[in-house]
Image (cartoon, rainbow over all chains, first blue to last red; front, top):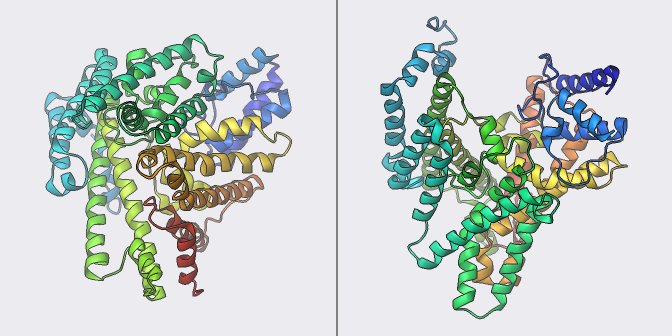
Length: 82
Length: 467
């Protein structure tokens, strides 16, 4: 995954945090959903963002929140799918 | 040591005893650990508490198991396993058929977990909820068509014994695809953990529990103190609920919603103001009962070392219906999201964001909600027959459909950028909107199945002066 793409993903997640009035910084390896910083609605917004931006299809069954739980996890997922 | 509390902050400081190093240090000592569990034992064995919650034998066995889990970290898996299945056995009616049913459920659960791990592409692994529900409903249909005796009674016994663990088993199957899969003994030990008195997976599954497990003695002490605080709060709410019931129902003579509805149907309705008082008080009473029960389960889990989020968290501060759904019954919402919302969202209406959210939310808060409650009460199919069990469920079906629609609309407003105001007036208005919806809808959420949907609709119309 290109550094610019990873940065864009990071900014997207930070944008979601700001919408939820969470001003704390976000580290690339920090759990976002399992820690409760973002809820399931934000998880689905992230899914939509990844579908539209990177063309990832999550509908095959076996979806796991761990796949998207941090910026690093998302980078690994995108690299695997490509 | 923490500084003495400042004037004006003394209550908050006093309540935050888990932040005082002296208290935390004491909780890590042998004397402190004994004090924690002795206090909780005494608290949960108070006569009024025992009358409304759990029997003393269950409390004592559960506390022994929780203490063993907390203080013997090397043996947590076997401890969970042993206490969960021992207390499940002791909680059954003394009947060979019930014991055999539990044994069958135990074996089938372990087989399902191992099979899902070995065959991740199979339907059981990919769609555990659909598979388990299909099996359960098929068994119920077959048993309801067969004559009584022998095999039929065995099938019903199995259904009634196993229904409490279904959703926990679903989480256990899903956990098999995790990259940090839980050990088998731990997994089987949390197929309805021994401190959970509910069909709803309060604490979700093994993966969630392990993520929230306190790993150091300091963290464990803080978690346990938080657990004690939550249990004290549960008992305070229990007492408050009992006092309110005495004052409102017994002293003031306000009827329950059930009695107000019955009086309306008999042609002797209460005045509209009394009717609304009944409906409002019933909502308060039910909400407090859910709070007590959820706090008790989470408080006990925290004594074991699991620093779990509360099941109910300040629902009066909800500013939207979607937020209320998250605050009022967190683990039920999580279960519906995990098993209904996410699968629906990932597979349907991808080209239409609004329709996608609407459909997924209805599948969770509507369909999933209804399915959970129908399946939980599968025993009514045995007593009423399948047809009457479905017909008598129509009120709850209406309730879950309206609830799902309301939450979906709330989420779509959020998607459109709607942010509720933060001023005092705006907060009051949000409170009125959210809780008015909840109070009105609760007329249909009663799970007694005594009154039909149309009777409840007519009663509600009468509260607005119609009919």
